[in-house]
Image 1 (tube, rainbow, N blue to C red):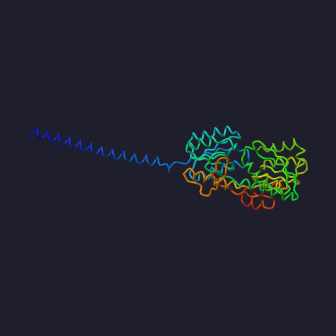
Image 2: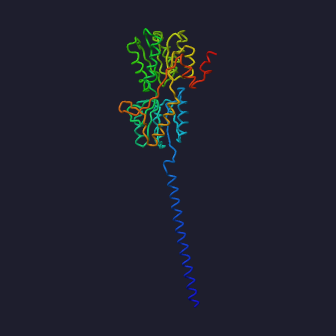
Image 3: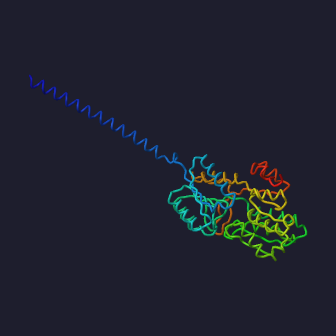
Length: 355
């Protein structure tokens, strides 16, 4: 009898242990399932922050820091993180920086090219790594970039020509002081200028290319070539920094305000020169519009979307998607409405020299 009782107790203990083990096994299985779901959520690509790299030529020109700040701010608003690189005008350094951004597994790399013809290999390497490439403001040549976004540079050249022709209705001799020839925008601006002056008696008798957009090169060139400088009836300058140095030269010759000088970018000192009458015109390019649109396009490309409103432009070997932002000519007549009313520069700053 005792043996029977003992046997029953042993059976109940074994049964209880078996039940306990079964419960533990079931709970463990549920726990594993919950952990697996959590891991799946953590790995959901839609939750990961978009990574954008932007490789600038330099911050030597006044506008580039403004481009950077607006682009970064808008990209962050859209949930992207931005890695900013600055090549300081060195094309090899920019190549190294693009490779660094490739290694950092960016979703999109935005390039302000130091040399428009030297980045084909880097663009291809980025795209081979599954990274979208945007050419910002300057077209990268012979490369199948995913997007080129810039201002209408031929229109910029047309505006420069129109301003000079208005000052020289009977024609005249024009000197060009361009930015570097390796910047594709220079060729586009020149094309717009040259096409516009045809048949209007305007003759380009001398052309100079300033390396790295350094304004002092314009002053040095004019100083070293006084016969050419004195022959010019007008000076077409690639940007406002170059125009400022041309104004400096002609001020010393007592010709400032009597010789038409044009530029672009609507730098503050250029706007000041326009209201005082020593620079004829500049070209306002809405950097806020360009930088915001570029940030939005970069985020859209990172999500796998195409840019619906893009046209196409030929870059030597490819037809690439192109978004164009319209520029605006700025003269003394419309500087208040274009520059001041838009908030680009403050009235008290533009009219500083008149106070």
